[in-house]
Length: 217
Image (tube, rainbow, N blue to C red):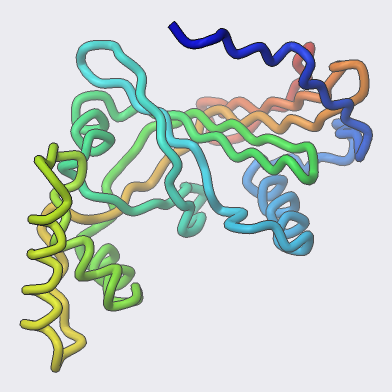
C-alpha cells in the first residue's frame, strides 16, 4: 500500500478583494461578463475553461473541463460530441452544473441549469471556424469509446489527413454539435480572509427576473 497523501498543511489566505451586493449587477449574466473581462485583462490562460458536471440515469455524477464558447441570449454555449459520456448523460438528464475557477483572482462562479442543443446550422457555422486539425480530430475520434491502443486512432488520423490534404472542407460529424446551458442559479464566490468568503447567489424567478441574496461562507 502506498503512503497516505497528507495535505492538511496546504493553506491559502484570500485577501485580494471583496464582493458586496451594492456593487453587483442586477443580472448575473452581466455580472459574469464584468468578471470575465477582468479575468481576460489579467491575462490568465484559458479563462473560458469550465468544469461541466452531469449525471446519468444511474445517478453517478461525472465532471470534466470543457471550454465556454460564448453567451447567447443569456445561455452559456459549449460544443462536444453528442455520443460522448457527457452527451449521453445529458440526453438522459438535461440538468447540469458549470464551475469557473480563477485562482489568481481568488474567484469562482457556479452555474446550475438545463441544456438545449444548438441548432445544426449554428453548430456547423462554429465547426467551420475551428482549425482544420481540430475538425479532423472531431471526425476521427469516437469520443469516450474505449481503445485497445492509440494506434488505430493515429491510423485513422493519417488516412483522413491524406484524403483531405487538398481541401479545407471537413464535413461536421452528425454526432457533433453544441449545447446551450440555460441557467436558473448562479453563484459568485470571492475569497476572503479567515475563510469568511463572500458568496452572492442569483436565482431565476418564474417571470424571468433574478433575485439576489448572500450565502453564508
